[in-house]
Amino acid sequence: MSRSAIVTAPIDVSAIAEEVQAATSGAVATFLGTVRNTSGGRAVTGLEYSAYTEMATREMDAIVREAIAIATGVELVAVHRVGDLMVGDVCVMIAAAHAHRSPAFDACRYAIEEIKKRVPIWKRERYADGSSEWVNACTQHATSAST
Amino acid sequence: MIVAGRVFASYADAIGSDRATVSVPDPATVGAVRAAVTTLSPSMPPRPIIAVNEEYATDDVIIAPGDEVAVIPPVAGG
Image 1 (cartoon, each protein chain N blue to C red):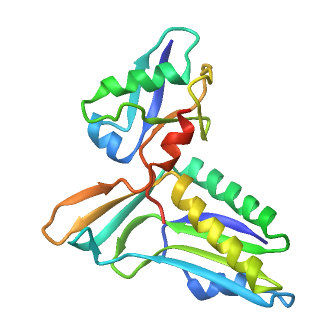
Image 2: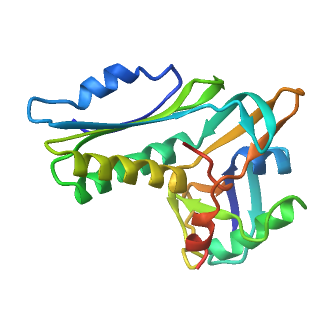
């Protein structure tokens, strides 16, 4: 069953890929977002993700429904982790299963792009020099919400 | 009307709290709240995003007593 979740525990990648797969699946497209060790030329040691959990859950659920609407028959799970993450940790995973690869890719791509635009989750980067900063990644919704 | 709301991430750091209260004329519109929250800190942007009852809200939305209002910094998930 398609679903979304905001979690604090590490994301079990193989379990989620298995979860979406069924006997009718001919393709499972997965996307993993991982914590990178640099940002804007600065050495990053880790990230802190925080969320407006109630609204983030609601937006993630809406995105899952929309992905299913554009790729009929897709089985999709979207999970975002919050809390303190280290370099290399998986922060977000999308898994989309379908009889054929094209709808699986389409649904997977749609879900991650919309999550980045709309879901109220924020990240604070921690740098090797001991400082930290909130990352203002996506201002796209600011335009549409204020018109 | 006094409107109390939740504040997150960089905006919470800017105003020094994850809760904020503003006073706006009745009927309390999102546009009026949006303008009022910019006065809470010099670090606030001119048009912060507002959510009402966990949905992004446009300026014309009227806020009723009991509604959950939130001030949303630019999102950075993924």
